[in-house]
Length: 211
Image (cartoon, rainbow, N blue to C red; front, side):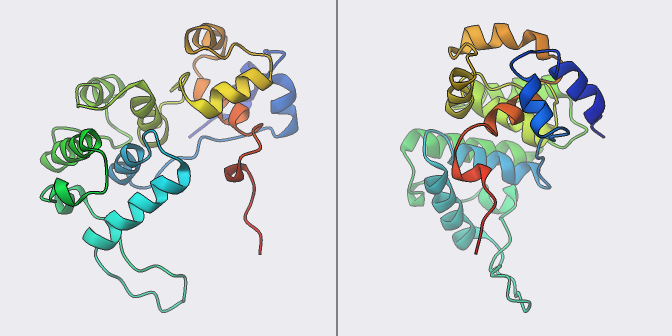
């Protein structure tokens, strides 16, 4: 339900973003088909590399996900476990720092009980408040989930390392407070501005796989 014309029209008004929009107009915010899964992955990705986050997620899925057959040969072996399947896991068996184990187990308990709702129809403010009240949930994790799971088009991640690197390369303020102030002109489409800025970085995630 995004309006790329309205988004790009506003972002083009910024002289820094204008050439980025002109190069690849109509960028969208990649959403998720499973908000609970994304929230779990966001916790697994806290303060680690993308590769490490994938490793943690793969271990969790192999240990707790339902096995499936993939006769087409796509390599699918398991479904990502639902919060109910993770609610009873033994935190001592998680290869994570103790504080992150607490973050993960508290999250899945809130999701499994229904105390925390992250579906697209959820109230964004209420969901943010509930997430922020969980142990280990800082602004980066809350806003990442708001962007990708809740679908808030104005979600913003000023502490994200990739965004700060892109901002510095584009001669934008790189400190979180200054970048947030500069980004006020991008509202209510800051999540889309993030996509344009992220795409400037020479990170493997910005390149289509080959071979």
